[in-house]
Length: 136
Ligand code: SF4
Image (cartoon, rainbow, N blue to C red; front, side):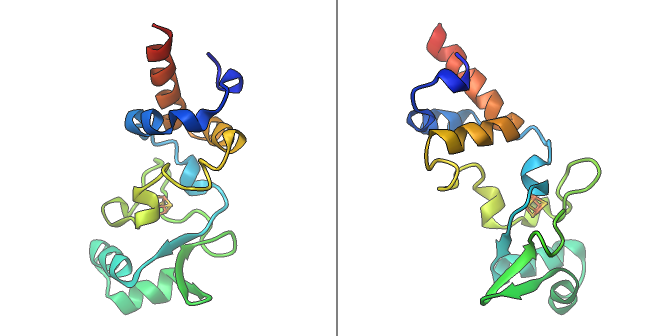
């Protein structure tokens, strides 16, 4: 069954998240978005890169309405993704990255899940796995 023909992809959320496996396309890191981080997360990133917290903040962080951003459309849009599609701070990546694709905006409606499936090969793989199970 193709994603387009599914009645409502939100009904498959638990199964899709369970079967999700990152395929390291880098697509989620490269698209336009805002990557927020807490002070503790920034400290972990700095430690991982072997620089002081102050140096890390000076080089990589902007503040917006009180929030610390390590990436935004106007500030480091590629974030920490490298040419091999790996995140250079993967072990210290912020919560928003760790919880992908369990984001409320992705599961808002059928169309939003469909759009994410088109962008993320890991989620598409999960869909194929779940629907393969459904069809047998
Ligand atoms: S911190 Fe790493 S995993 Fe998160 S968006 Fe940036 S490059 Fe991607």
